[in-house]
Length: 522
Image (cartoon, rainbow, N blue to C red):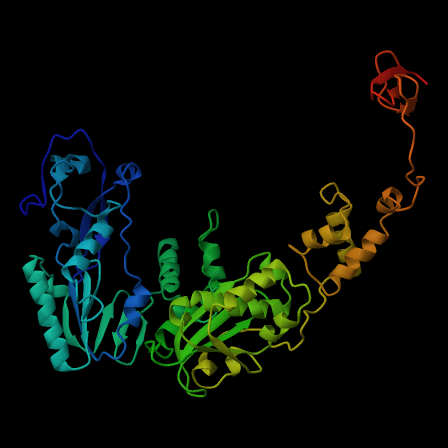
């Protein structure tokens, strides 16, 4: 690095520690290492660069209809960008051979990725997203024909040569029908995930979860499968690979290695959104093609939160549609699409009397989309074509209400906690019900709340009876002089005073409203 002009000797006022991390082995199998500097303390006092990085999913989706690909890797990446001389001493580091600082931009600075992406966008201006795509130092050139691909590749070379950017030839692939790019296997048929290594220790286990999370668009019902593996990542848990972990590993690996490819989205054709919900999660598949010959574009799933678990079955189905439309917003917004579901939540929401704020919010959210609905009985498993290959267990119960899971005693205990305790504060029926439904739900719950409050002994004793207790209003005479007419009343009993008084005798002049208060024991 010193000979290549990347670093230089320095006597800096700042210093950061260095680390050595393993790199991918070369073709001969020899392990390689990379020196990096820990700039965490410097990053904490550095103003961040908010230049956005491209969405990887958007890059992959843009490769549809291409048949030929070339991938390019910029040599030495960030080191091709020189640093401002005034800032060079701030990124100094020390080794056993002395103090040094970088002359070119190193990895580890919080603004480095944004700076490099801004440079690549400038260099590829006019052809980015049209003839080539870039994500930091990784470039892919694509074309539908040999001539189109070659013309685009030459244009990219001209841009890189003009700005003096070098390529790492050993990491470049040219004129291929199948390439690895950004963790995906790209081909003219579609794209899929990369090979998944077996987990043998906590480090590789966490790496496996990160990798499958990155490829979750290929895995139906992803939110439910890896729970046994996440358990091994908790602090204080010994790493014991048992049958539940092996089953979860195989369920995650199988869709990425054996399942059909996801097809590239074609924005000139109709999208079809299939949704369903189980007791603990919601799932969706975005597909394209004629009914019966559908091909998957992406899978998505989400585990329900504690409050969402209390939704009724039909509410969960409706929530699945709302969540799926939001999740696939870049594909669906502003264009007509078809929703396939095995229930009729959209008809149900229109018939609900006095819908809650949550249901109104969901309904308004869906009004932003242009969709039609098709109802098809059964789960996503029972669908034809590509849907028949989706390994996802979802509810098939045709009831519109969930089965009763709480006994009468359990319901009474919940009602007692929501109404009769200090936190319940003996609220009225509406306030008690609104508070309770945030964390509980069962058929007829509102009626149960009403009956419980009607039988509450404390509420009945202290309930204000709405009866007439006063004479009708009538005209009275007002005296013409002070103290001719007094209004007298007794207030109490109150807390006993130091002189043992428990009552207050009040006298008010009817003309001037002058008040006299006299404490008294009786």
